[in-house]
Length: 68
Image (tube, rainbow, N blue to C red):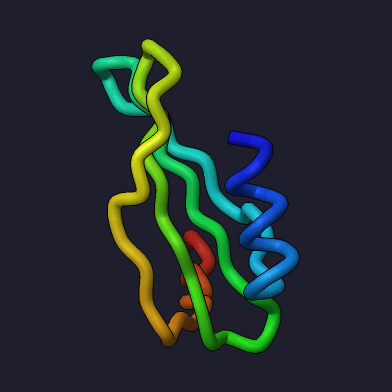
């Protein structure tokens, strides 16, 4: 996994910003660049297998509404 992280940082300027763990123990990671241009999503299975599940050329941060 470290090789993939280094390649994303070097080639696309992407860094990890979100980690999700599902009920089956798989972890999803979202990497984005600072300019809002590119993103890559990976799944890391409990056995350690790393799979790229998607990527794209646009992302934007949606701010959460404050709770009342």
